[in-house]
Image 1 (tube, rainbow over the protein chains, first blue to last red):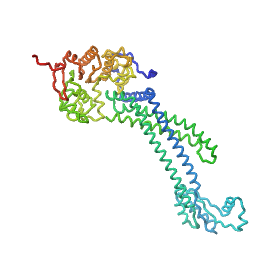
Image 2 (image 1 turned 90 degrees about the vertical axis):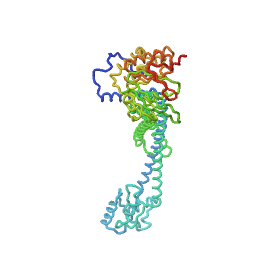
Image 3 (image 1 turned 120 degrees about the vertical axis):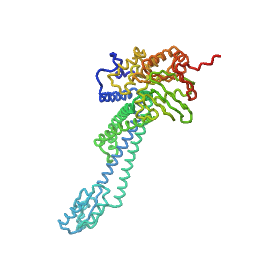
Image 4 (image 1 turned 90 degrees about the horizontal axis):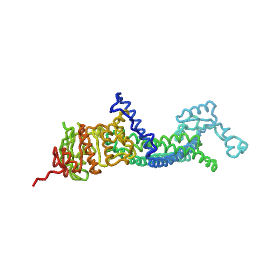
Length: 321
Length: 233
């Protein structure tokens, strides 16, 4: 590409001496080499215009899909977490406990490992909730006497601890029965585990796909510079010297693709959320404020990593000989 | 100690084609050697062994004090810094000027940038191409392109210049210019090994001639000709 006059080295008027009087330190030489190679990579990115466009767009496609998997995963995780947060173990207390005994049972429940909160629900409160649940009937009149026991509502830190916490609660003095909706809860937990696993697997697969795609794309870049590699090796460039410009070029391609993917997702996600909320207001989607920043960070990190990795893999074949 | 030494070298390519058969050869510093022989005789293979583009199947190859046949891959670049290599097809980078092509070779071996302009100029003046430093390869004639590639090979001040059919793509006059240039480079102390099919050049220059046939050295003469003189009837 001719427009790169900026980068062109030009013959300069020089004195006859092939070595300058000043000694050049190893560090200075190394720094100048790294600067030169980095520039070679950047120039290569522009010189191989069409190849770069091809590489960037295929990495971009992979990153967009990866971003989609990530967004889906996060939303599913949020839904699962919300569902799990509603899971609670209910411990029924024996009737006629003194306030001190009740307090003792509450303390004991709190000491169970993995328990997040314990709240005491007096029987009056339980009755009020039941009335509410039944649509505001006055049960107190109908039954004359409150048949409900006092209860402890215990929420575990993690949903999978539910069963263990329930077992432990049974041996708390004053507790007569423990229930956590065993069947339903187990099934629900199985479902959330499945959703999380599938989401993570999809994200992993798409991540791997982006590496493969960018390796192929960067192979084009290496092929485009095959002759340069050949000459560098012929005149005695070390492997790192040959590799460096490609790593820079791969990094740049990954980064450019990641920036494009970030911009697209930053625009698309809020738009999609707005449309979804309009159509199904009850659908629990994560607000853009919680998604966009981590998404952009992930895309940039994955994009650059994928670019570097792809370049390293595709240049390796040239250096194998 | 000879600068280049081959001892009992065999080269068998995958597939079984035997390119070199028990080749022993030694070249002293400052020599000019023509490698001649029909196509497929193993001339290019021999050169490739010297810059370790290929490894010998058997035998020993020593170049400039390096045991090339057992060089670790990481050391290969440092061997090559003692060698300049020139090809029939020049192998210039089309998107860089002559100056940049020469500077590229210097850059690739980590030459401090402050040294580069003087080195490039020295190399280009030696081959008589300084005036065309700003030209791109396609703007040059074949002879000029070959001179540019020789300048690139010499920029790093190697002890040995290997030339694989350097005149193969050039007309007779230009070929003669290139060979004169290589001869002048040799007079400055650089050892030159050149493969060629160019009978005229070999016969006029009368330098050492090594002839290969079917992978074997069949002739090694100090002031040789392209072909063995026939017995006078």
